[in-house]
Amino acid sequence: MLLWILSGSLVLFSSFDVWYFLRGSWMVIKSWFQVPVGDVLAEQVVHGRVLLHDLDFMCHMNNARYLRECDFARYAHCTRNGLFLAARALDATMLVGATTIRYRRSLALGEAFELRTRIVAWDEKSFYLEQRFVSKSDGFVSAVMLCRQNVIRGNPQKILEHLCKKKVDCPEISEDLQHWISFISASSQALRAESGLDDKNK
Image (cartoon, rainbow, N blue to C red; front, top):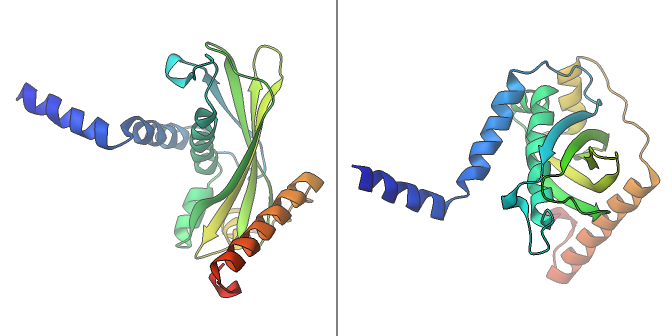
């Protein structure tokens, strides 16, 4: 029996990113039992620390780990402010459509950090979130990521109105965010042209 369990575990861990699903589920469950965040635009904070399995060959937190941590922080963010439930009630789904990240200073082994997540804007198709890695040692923003969260079978405004029971005004889009949105649009148009697709296939 023990051999079967060990063999099954080996197959499972070699075939799937088990720790990702376990941690993602834990973030949602933990956030579900925390105090709800009533302000959908409020910044939320998740605390983290650089561990051995986060390191690259330079003994810094590797690039992929930043994106992974951002995933978990968004799970917590959308659970506590109710976006997940509101989208589900409207039969909508939210998927990452684009991300960009700027690395400003490495996070070293054992370094504690805050991952701050907030919604900065939205349009007819997507939410735009900013996520910042802030070192607890001196408050330095070590990395900052922008994420475009596409809404499938719905739109952000309807989700917000369902959640907040009122119309929610979109914050003013910052200049850097507008540049990024323009880049995404230009890239999409170029790729459609390259593939011979028309606007209907965006």
